[in-house]
Amino acid sequence: MIIIEPAGETTMDERPTRMPPPEQVMSPDPEPVGVEFLAELPDHVRAFFDEQHKLYSPK
Image 1 (cartoon, rainbow, N blue to C red):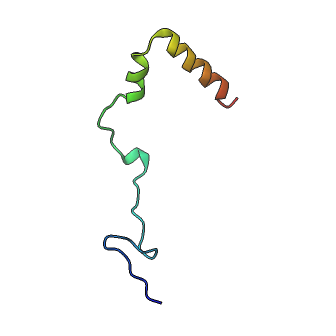
Image 2 (image 1 turned 60 degrees about the vertical axis):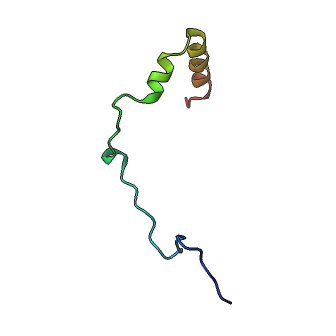
Image 3 (image 1 turned 45 degrees about the vertical axis):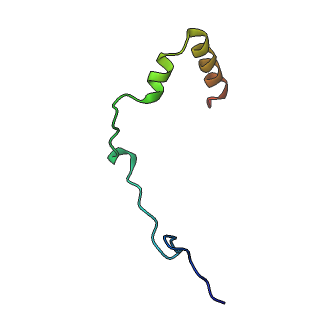
């Protein structure tokens, strides 16, 4: 049996790319995007998200 691998594909024997730990990754924006997103929401929408977060957050 002959196995032909497409060009650019990796084999299982190759080592995976190492991911740096989160503390070594520098964020391009010091303020997270989620904070900006929540700041733009109307009060009733923000209240809904807060309620959902309280329902599903571990106690």
